[in-house]
Length: 468
Image (tube, rainbow, N blue to C red; front, side, top):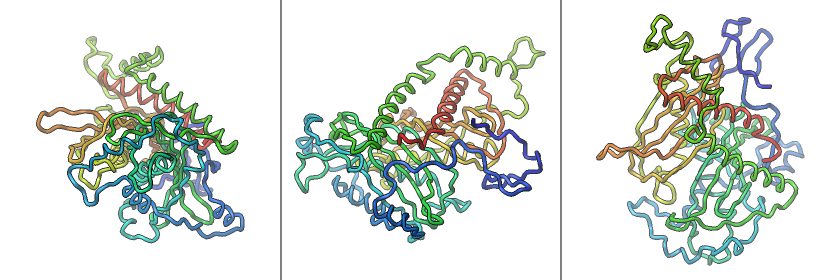
């Protein structure tokens, strides 16, 4: 059973260093994590050539022929995207005639059909290294999240086979990210001067939606070191992004794919349950109400019969003091293939703002452990003012749960529209202050954060299981 770090920094004379490794008299001890060690490789992690190289004991990195940037450029060309940027996107309505009328017209596809592996060539491109490296000499997780988003779209495109589409005609469907189910990070710290392998395949298909699993790995000491695994839910839309269109159904090629597909059905049910578990739809339980009441009582002055004076207990912090915000002006370089703001760009900024808020809160450099239930409610136009707000909504021992909301701000009317919600679990090297809500709104954020944390704690321990 997972037990968060409960020792103080002085216990047994241990020394917590900045990379979260605990040094004891007997040498380094494993830092506490949300993830199991010895995680199995799953999905289609190696091509036959790569497997043969590993079998023969090769310590050289298997050769991956294509880079992520090459895939992006090829996909943009297939979509008919203009370079450089034009304020008005090309009219795509004429491509509607190539859309399938029903799913029966679409040939069945296996998961192997959609599998792609590409490299992020950090070892060869020093300019690229500068974009990915952190001030601590590791790799920016926000950049990796951004890469995974566009890669998931490319994998979904590879899955879709439309017999009605003539050669040379632009791909008619619009592929949009609806939800990022979850992204889990392992203990491994990626190096900014070594290539990263990004791979993935479609793991489930509905009528107009596709679930895509994406893996990131780095080759070190003769082995692939897993960095993360992500699950994306994408929707196929018409050329003008007005209505849903059909995608190819999945016909599993083997028992392994049948198992993965069954897991996809389970994850679909879980996504529906998550929507109903939100505090806007599910009233706090008796246990949750009792928890909130006890927090309220311990923050009041017992000598004041009006109970109007709030007192902050020791080793705690008001939730309102944890909020960190920024404003971003989206530029053409941040656009996707449809001239709206790229979802991965929003995810990158949310990831980094969540880390900043957690760092300021606990005074340690935390490590992001998982992201879950990232929703995309509406597209954001290029040139929009995007406000982002990160708040520490729940804490437990050395774990921090943050929520980030992204909003489009209209400077003329002063109105805002919330477009995205992000949920992050981070881990600090020592116990963090308990976060305390003051208002009913903050109390609901606290309950929602607690529910997400408990769900993520349970889900993460099976994140790399045999069903994906």
